[in-house]
Image (cartoon, rainbow, N blue to C red; front, side):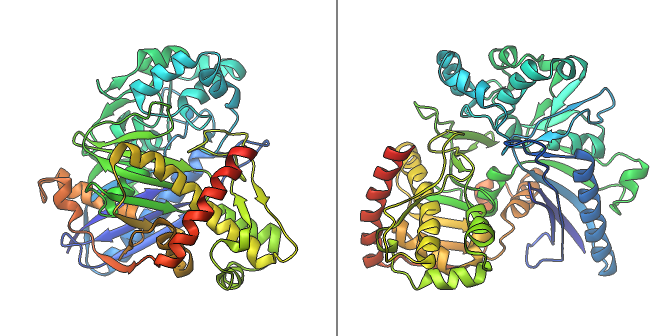
Length: 488
């Protein structure tokens, strides 16, 4: 049986999923972890060679599974994390580690574009749709200009993990429109690198990859390294898009009023729209999925990592135990509030210096209160982003939820109660990989539109909001917003 593969190259893991053309069942699945390095406070890097090694491990594992069952891979599509940056030589080999989205070393450069050169920063945002923040390659390149001028001068080109992997697989120096629109360097309207942004960053457009549509297909180049992947020689590689855009598609969230909420290590809330949108204050991103679909929303630095912090550093108890204890606490945590800014914040604050805090701590508050308030704080922050989003897109009528948090029925029900709308879970939680497969179907003509592709997504449980708890959360959210205003 022929099959499609979707690969999701995330910050924590490389994952791959194989499905038949009718999407009826999972034929194979594989995963491998990727290590993040923190050489200095505020730094977050990955070794591109180790990401490539994890990618090869995953694909080789997947193809072995498929071969044993008599399946043949015809297409592989790619979903990758956004905002990484590495320098490369003339042969496409790394000259540096990849600087990740969570790296905050470019705080000063981002602040410069928000204050001293705010007019320029706003022009770049309006042109690119990427909020000004240390996460974006625009600011990272400006940091290299100030702190690593020799590297900036010696490098032949700059790109992300996506460009590096794509070059290893195809020999082509290309980047999809979706990843490009997340760099802060791409003129989205004209589908080309922005002269305004590249001049500020200190690079030439010819040092960046050629932007191509997300449905672009290339053959697998022959090399000793690609031979070990176990893929057929005639396999077609689909360049795909960013993880955020494909998570929307893979969650079936294409229609107006359908909002996607993802919480993994970090989190995001997004809607799919038919034309580019810009927030007048530069707080929402707008990334391209294809020429007819754009994904607008906001990311948070603080999602599942807050639960990890609670478990490892605050309670010293396993996640299952603290979730069970927190479930016994009433909504609103008896007045205890948590600002979840443990690692600075992107949306809605766009402040890398923001820090977390517990507010209104009282004698009666227990460890379970602290856990529940933290979980509520993560969702309150996402609801604050959604308020900004709804001003541009209209009301949220249903939420399609995915990511690691979707494994907790308690946390998902909390989301339904807080938002006041139904929350639906996908049958498969691998929305990035699924989105890549659906994009493949559009690329090869099995479906005519992404709207048609999204209808193929299947769903599991739906969580309905509890009206009483929703009223409680509406009042608590107002108090939480006042707390944010006073403490950030």
